[in-house]
Length: 312
Ligand SMILES: [Zn+2]
Image 1 (tube, rainbow, N blue to C red):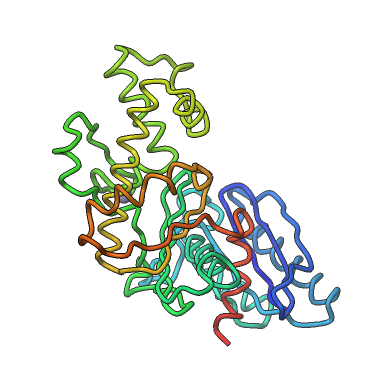
Image 2 (image 1 turned 30 degrees about the horizontal axis):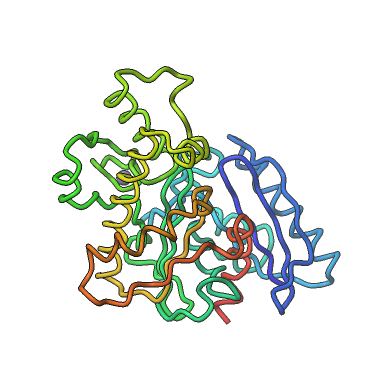
């Protein structure tokens, strides 16, 4: 049996998969914000109960919302203080007497799509999650590329291509939580899209009240009813995303690019990005297939369970 935990900023999800990757158990519970001992207790209880229920000693994979500090081997998770600075792999290994595999949540999401998902037949697959943040991952032959600093695939923290400022000189200058300037995440995540909307609303209409400052789904709805600010914002949003994905295509020449996160359902991504990306790649190049994730919200926990499946 394969046990997967998806630790998010607000909840812990636990699933058990059999050897054919069927989900045979799923549950979720709020994530303790500050108490690391409580967090370890929740995970241990799930594991001990599942071992009893399924008469086995399941392999444990854990996805988390952050990055690994490769020097100290601790997790950097600013959005979940209970896990921040901890070495959960070692601490759970002591409690549960078995190896624990730990991986960034975007990497888990991508790995899940490599097994019976949108990247099943891909040799080189890139994943991009468009949610509160912008996550990314690279899988080659169904293996996550981790990198020297466990930071491979952090596409959200590439600066947007310089020609974007020539094409859209009115773009706001942004500062990212990572310390960088003009990171892709600050324009193309759900939060970035909302920031763009507010910026263009002020430019085009002179002001933007709190009620007028729309969030992702409302911006898409406004675009669909042809509201001028939303139309402009989506045009700029898709142009920036296409330029970044075009650059990634020149770097990796991937077979497939899988979208996850709340904005992955936005149909204009699949309609408009191919033609726009073609401006940033070689002429006549076969672009990667653009696909919505098959496993959607389940991807994180499923990919965590697959961390050990994949290792076999
Ligand atoms: Zn950044």
